[in-house]
Amino acid sequence: MATPAASRVLFSEAVRQVLLSWPVLQIAVDNGFGGVYGTQKADWMVDVVQQFFHDNADLQRGEVEDFLSDIMNQEFNTVVEDGSLPQLCDALLQMFSQWQQGALQTLRNTIDALSQKKSERAKVTAPPPQSDDDEEDEEPQVMECEPSAPSVSRKADPPEEEDGWTVVKKK
Image 1 (cartoon, rainbow, N blue to C red):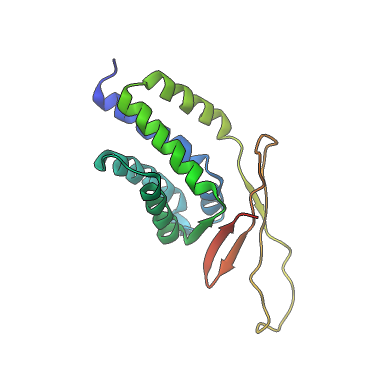
Image 2: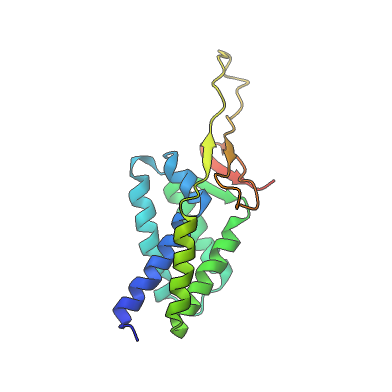
């Protein structure tokens, strides 16, 4: 059996794969929603999420959702409303349960599957700028999102800016 430190590293890698394959985080990092240190914030997020699981016993999905939602809001100025947060939390909770039960091979298989999926990145394109000088009637620009691979079962919705915050909504 793996040493406790090695198995903890395995759970940390599982968290990394789940978060970095999440289209909302990909879009936030790729488009600078977290500022110039967006990539470092994403790496930091992996560390604090895995630590959150280790520090809190018997976590519920709502607690994990609130934690991740707060991080996305505070660090990436992004409100997640596309419905992906519960799915992400369920995946993290399942992997943590596997880790706690010592099902490390199952966890490795999940990480491998996510590693292959990681290459599928969400693509975001901004509409062409309009040359309207009247800023009073200006509406926020909407970005068009397209999934990069046909295996994605639903379309990512465009982020919308509301009062300086980026909102990702589900249709």
